[in-house]
Image: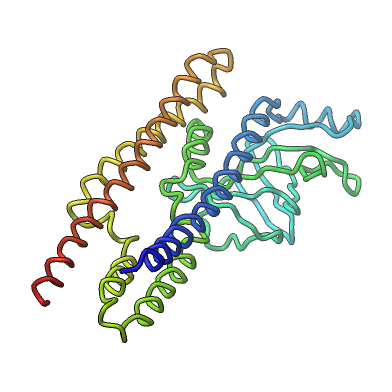
Length: 302
């Protein structure tokens, strides 16, 4: 087996199974980080109530930032009407950052047009935060160039809303993102082509076997003996997620307690690094195990 062949296989592995999904990880984490920063900012804004709303309408106060939550009463084009106990507020979703909490996962709704709400339950609620502006002789929540509107659809109790939004913004598995399936397919196809190209050369069967083994490396973390490292990695990732949530909630509820928040942030970073190392060790263990079996097979066959 030539060193150049091994480097070619390793290059395909690193790029399509590592670098390409990493780009998706960075994109997803950057988007969620921006969301959390914006969400923490809007939580400091006053809550919109009946007295404040009437004051804004009566005195014609200029654009101001508020937060509001209630049930979706009606929809029309890019407009929502959100109802609380004493208010019915129009909300324009054009250019808004619209999210939906589903199974403790925060899904970003990318469409600029209003989504189809027919599949949502009657108890669907929405949290809105941003500018209250004057549009066509009425005041509405709407996005501005400086402050895009944040809207989060949810179906939980009001008391749990902040915690659930923060928890949902910490996805369980960043590796599996919008880029990963395509990257794995392209990488697997490239490795298969590489293996097939060497089939005519019996002296290079080791290269062929190596390329075929490399095709299945994304599955290696889920098979023994490497699955033991994967289980430990999942535990550490869960610890990292819990510590990150604790850090975020401290920043919201106790902004002066920076020391404790830094402690949880450091713990989250250490646990996440440990989780990555465990996954790599799990893959390495299975590569060694499968490689050893392949060598024994080749020697016995030879």
